[in-house]
Every structure is written in C-alpha cells, then in structure tokens.
Length: 393
Picture 1 (cartoon, one colour):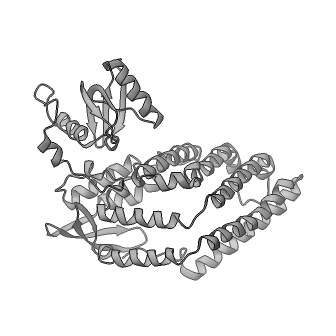
Picture 2 (cartoon, helix red, strand yellow; picture 1 turned 30 degrees about the vertical axis):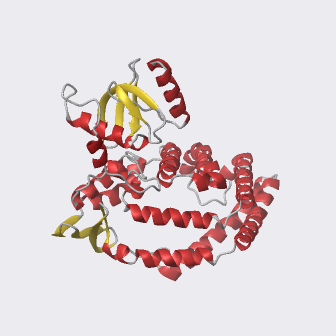
C-alpha cells in the first residue's frame, strides 16, 4: 500500500473518532497499534502535539491517542534538533516509556516518572487551565484506576437498558416542553429574575437546553457503550463536549474575562500557591489556603508515580470494599423500579406544563416549582450549613 493511500485510510479512520495523528516524516501509530500515518513534527506542548501533513495542514492531537513508541519519539523530537534526532526508537527506549494501568489511563505521558510533588501539582494545574479534566484520572495511581473501573463495571450490572431508555425519553420530553413553552417561561413573573437579566436569559435559553442535552448524552444512556468505554477516553470526550457547550453558554452571561477561568480561578490559584515541605523522597506536607476557613493541611505520599493524599490512600482499600458491599446489596429490579417511580413523579408537573395554554397557567406551575426548590434549599441549609459540606481536612 503506497504512502498516500495508507495515510488517507488512517486519517479517515481517526477522523471518525475526532482526531488525526502523525509525526515528523516518520511512521506514527495510534494507541491501538493498528493504524499508522506519516507527517512532520512541529511542536509538543504538554500533551498536545502539533503535526504537519504533506499538504501543509497543521493538526493538534493529544499524546494519549498514540502508542508508546510514538509518544517517546514525540518527546525526543521536542528536545532534540531534527538533524540529530533518531527516526526510530530502540527496544530499550520503548521499555523506558512509563505507562499506566490497562484500564485505559495514559497519565505516564504527562507525569515524569521521578516528578517531585511541586512538578506533579504544577502539571495538574496546567492541564486544568487547558480544560483537560481527564487529568483527574491521570493523577490517580494505576491500581486505583483499576479499582474504580471495577466498581463502575459492577455498578453497571445493576442497570438495564430499559431504564436508560426511559431516562432518554424523559430528557426529550423535558427539552421539547421547555422549547415549546419558551415564551411563556421567559415572560413568567413567577421566576425570581431581575428584569435587566431577562434579555440575557432569553439569549442563553437555547444554549442552556444544549448543555442539558449533552449532560444526558447518548453515551450515558447506552449500556453497551458504558460497559465497553475506557474510563480515561470517556472522561476526556464527555467533559470536552460539556465544556464546549458550557463555554458558549457562559459567554452570554456578563462575566468579566473568561467565564470558566472566573469560576475555577480561585481553586487553581490555591493549588498554584500551595506550600510544600519535603519530608522524604516519597512524602511531603502541604498547606493550601481556603477561601472560607483556615488553611488546609495535608500529607501526600508518592504511590506508583503519583502523589496522593496519605489519609485517602491509607483508607482506600476499606472504602473500595465498602463500595463493593453497597453495590452488591442492590437489586437491579429495585433500582429500575425506583427510576420509574422518580420519572413518573417528575412527569406530573412536566405534563401539566406541556398542556398549559395561558401565561397564568404557566406562572402557577413555575411558582409551585420555585417554592418547592426554595423550601428544599432552606431545609438543606438548616441541616448542614452550606449544603452540609465542610472543607476537606
């Protein structure tokens, strides 16, 4: 097979998954090891690789889409001038590549094997600033990734496709009704909205429905896809789709600067400014400022190339065993019945809203819903302060 046909087939196959890969005039292989393409190396920024195809078009692809040999070559080319870089990797080089568990992680490409705690948390901050929320998965020790995947698979045995189909049907009814009654809802005096905000909310109405549609996407409502999904890839793809929709929505609201940065900025700033004191090569003590309380002090230990909370890690096996016991105690029929009962209760006000033909009727329905939400919020505040949550210690 000639180069052009091989490249075309590979590009077409990966385009179906939303990505195209390739490297510096050399052969580069995807993470499955079945598809290869040739392209020129341009640069490597964190886990984002920029390549140039033969037609001059530049493409950005995350390293986790490539196999170990290609990842290693990317790092070599990023550090070594092309004239001295080897066009291929030796077997010993390939063995030196750090990988995560077979459960679908690829954080070995992000965290150096001997990363200090400061380097580790700096990488986490950098990836979060890029809106790469899969970093939460990458930051876990491989054995913990495997444990979590096992728990997810166990939980999925308690769900059937009929229940997911019912949820999907209900989502369509919700979106359809909210679209049909848009004018009534936006004009409702029962909504506690300042009149100056109504034009903004009107503009953001459809994008907000788009966020709802993505949150309950087909990926979450198809049991076979959930069972076969690799956790890291699922998190990456799902979160990126939500971020795109959420970004578009938030930009319609008068936030200063980048809305997402405004929301996450405080947490990231605390993480950046976290004080780290080295106890040993595998243990550090940290102090991080809290917005609404005293500084949070925590001890982190190095486990399988990752820095994790010592308290969390010491209790992890117990937590996993408790989760397994709780999941095993559930009955699929009971869960499915509870889903149906919850949907039936939710369909009552939705059905009434769908049948409403006047502004007065819609106001009455929305007013009742607002009162219920306010009562639930007040009860929750009274039971445990800010929703019953307290800063982690």
